[in-house]
Image 1 (cartoon, rainbow, N blue to C red):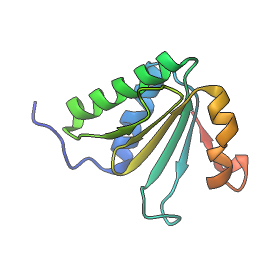
Image 2 (tube, rainbow, N blue to C red; image 1 turned 90 degrees about the vertical axis):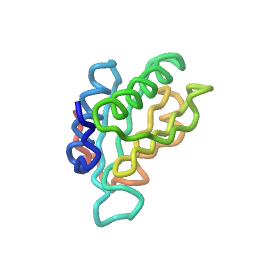
Image 3 (cartoon, helix red, strand yellow; image 1 turned 45 degrees about the vertical axis):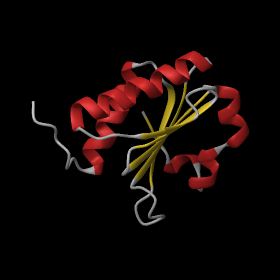
Length: 120
């Protein structure tokens, strides 16, 4: 199969959300960053139940993006599994252990109200 390198940010987001759901990520939140910052079009934040699950969710997501879209992702934090950041280019994904997510509260930084988040 020919890799689809020029996937739109929406197609990439859909693949990411499906992958996270398939791997039982919890409390998945997507944030539309268009017009707010130039770092990415979307941010996705989710939780895994343990360090091992956080690392596994991130690894599987990276593998799916590579196999389905032919894109390589930059990943940081997989070794510890507390907070893994996956930079796919158009979408930034944060996978947290629940305690670490609660501590950093990234959603509050990017969302003025909870109503602005679209929860999956």
